[in-house]
Length: 328
Length: 261
Ligand SMILES: Nc1ncnc2c1ncn2[C@@H]1O[C@H](COP(=O)(O)OP(=O)(O)OP(=O)(O)O)[C@@H](O)[C@H]1O
Ligand SMILES: [Mg+2]
Image (cartoon, rainbow over the protein chains, first blue to last red):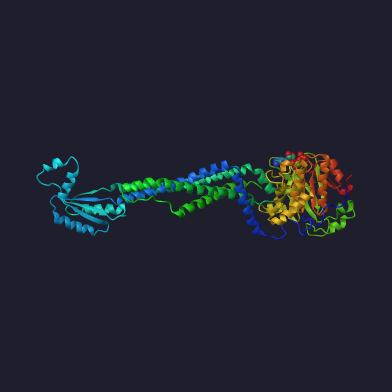
């Protein structure tokens, strides 16, 4: 065996003037490179176990889709309430002594009200005719000598008037002189409105809770991932990897989980929209004539994957910080 | 700080060695042999709840020197190397590595320091799901070297350990000796100032062990300081390098290369 070293001095391993890794500092390029590598390798890692990844993503997507779906349903209920509220008429029964001129005067006064769209005066004779058309009454009515019905004002609120303002209108009319009774066919709207208020608050709480759930799911998945790769992490640290370097692929994994779950959740929401479109349209035909399903705004659909990716990153970050704190 | 000791390669090896050495930049930047790369000053290590694994250890290893650390099982060989790699911290005393006091190196400084070391482990610590080349590339990637340069260095390192043909294979398909050589390639690919190896020949047959040790000696000849823990006395004797002997954590003998029989 020759005692002379066999390797040539021009070998790249030995020829450099300086020792160490860097021939020239290139922090930005290498940083970008490692981000690219981390993003790619973490994605490949997720793809290499498709079933596990899909399950995690599906759980997260359902958690994200739930508040979205409720939000969508509430929006549609609100819209239906508004649409059906357009047919809401308020019947103002005048006191028996009030004649036609008093009724006309009142109608004119009411038409000036900002929340009133139209007022029709129904004479006792018209009322009798309407009653007569209803089955079973005609015979009984003919036995009456004179018409006992009062004048009635049919008031139609402005379309889109809020349930509150309609409520105020009804109270105003009750206080008018010569009014016997006010019958509001739309009290259900106030109740619906109150329910929707509760629902909106509930969706907000649900969204926060489920966001936490998404955070936990990502966190736990990354935790298991890190635990199963503790040996690799140990090796990386031994050859000089910083914590940030070791952590980066896991942060990207969190981002991927979030992004995929967000896209899937947005897909779920669109599917719900499509499923709702038909029944809502049918309902619309029965009531308002034209009613379209209320769709989620595109910005919200686009924001869901972004927000989910941020959640995924956050979950991975919290867990990895906690788990790598003892690694050295 | 610098000992007058002139290292053995020039003395013990061929006439070619001196001008070979002259062309090599020294890690500590001083073109003079004997500049201490490693310095232990009254270093003790007590593991939590354990007894003293190292006590009052003082020695120096010069730049470009190759030394063995030996002793019975539990003597503190691995502990000594772990202190150098900041895998463990000493309880007392001062360790200086290339002029840097290791006690002053904080958590953030550990990766930076390790990038200047090459560490070889008995169980080689390869990543089994990455190719041989990817394993060797790790320190360069961590150091942020450009891909083209990285590739060149990886190939050179693999060629050096005679495994260039295996670069695309997974480590599991290699023999124990080959895996150990991949570990060595990974340790030297970033051209560390100091190469430390803990029982690098622990589970290899004797002829393979000699081959591996020769490889370390070659790196020493190009200026790398090499520190190897081993309890294989026959092999150590064969290498004719400095030997530091530990016994229950104490330095009991420090035999210069020339005196190894
Ligand atoms: N992590 C630890 N915690 C507690 N005690 C430890 C730890 N590591 C080593 N020791 C103890 O320190 C002493 C020195 O251990 P070390 O591993 O350095 O010995 P060694 O010389 O490398 O032995 P071997 O030849 O068997 O590898 C031993 O008594 C050991 O039991
Ligand atoms: Mg040991």
